[in-house]
Image 1: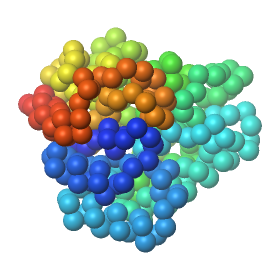
Image 2: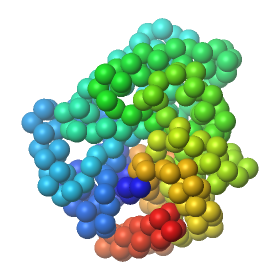
Image 3: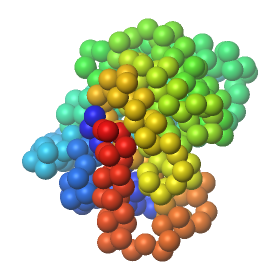
Image 4: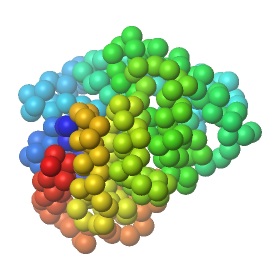
Length: 288
């Protein structure tokens, strides 16, 4: 396993200085920095190459995280929105080649967040699978892994548990289409979190981690040792990425519905120290 974190731990908006974040990731002991894939569409080739080289020199690899806007929804009954979604994701995939990123994750089987049933769930599902097959072909050509994030019922109506994720991936039928299981969402939807990991098996391509209230791993009550044992049992060798949200205020907190300070008033130095301690805890639980 490799370990990383989402850049948004250190920012209140969905933007940042990635060079500063890369330095923080390296100092904390991470192998991977997870960036906003949509940002690549706004970066010039020279900017992308500079960030690629900077991370490479630090020994960091890059994964990309996306949540499509409403006009880029591949599950929509509107064919224009579906085509927008395919074009948007495939555009990010092509930019990922330039930055050397091999993993795209997120709930890009619809828009995010989304709690609206467009017609029926079955119709949304069929439209989404059909468009995802097109995206998966491009991913295969570019040798990029698609990891579809299973979300709780309050953020998407489509893939809410591991069973639905497995069925969706099998219907897409691409070796480059796998699952992302997130401990925050699993805590809401799964009866047995370790059991869901074992059920996913070799379809599990990526893991997101955070406590039940989205604090750093080790600050709450989730069964980390049990989940770590399950990951080892299935031979998981992908990336485990922390996705904690701790500070209220700004677009990030608004979008993840965070309205109170979970950091206990931590300053930047303490935030850095806390995530480094959490990584030590997580490695102990997951690596055995």
